[in-house]
Length: 334
Image (tube, rainbow, N blue to C red; front, side, top):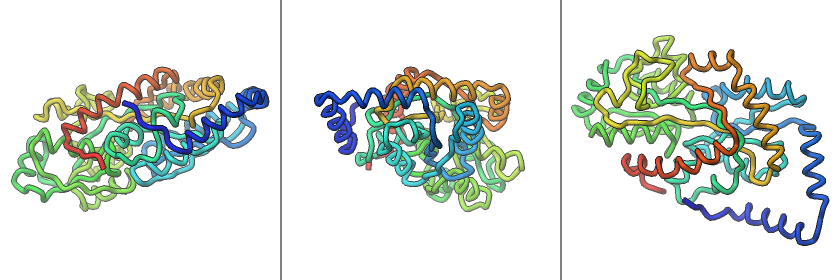
């Protein structure tokens, strides 16, 4: 699937090409100097979620360790909103010098591109892959007093009250939205979609009883452990490592339900490949830490580092797969 380059990226490419034609070797020297001395100042990593979201919680300790190793702070810059479009567009417009990176996600890059005809950036053109960060299977959470203790009971309850039960998401076209719509489509039920700004806000709505259902990953686990929400099933085709005793939706009467979200690190397109590889090495080293692996697995998060090439291939391959899911979930492009 090809998306037209955005105007600002087109201008960048034209300027770069003009410099090459004019024979400006300073660009290559600048790139070499940047690689040799990088980083010389704080590196900003845009997280397209609110503080306290799963992406925010995972990245803070990882970036803290990366900053220690590289001698300059790597700091989180939370830019939530518009189904992650605000943060992604800011990152796409940033200078390709390695000092602005971003968390790109399946929701923000793939699902947004498929469900939104007016996306202000091109996920396949405007970003350079660095590494996969982690994956989070979706879980079907419900409020504690909902009279449904299994997926079958939830389906029966929803069918008895068409359009009355509600499900939360973290925005239109996000994985939690797709999960809810796919559940509706396969199970043949009618639930009302209620979008929120981020995972913590949607989780709080579930805890307080404002909504009935929330398809989400790791950052609802703490509420689950405190008994403030209940979980009925996981959303992948296989049971999760974090909760192997919990049945999948596929096992529970919602055949072929398979929603697992991924999160990855990207730079603006144009960052020199040697610099991409350097950042990759440092971030991957932290993601492979046994302590961090164990810590986040208990929260339903599986750290899965990769090479830049593996991430790029995964991003491209995910478009046709998610297009099928969006079609099945009957989510129309805006």
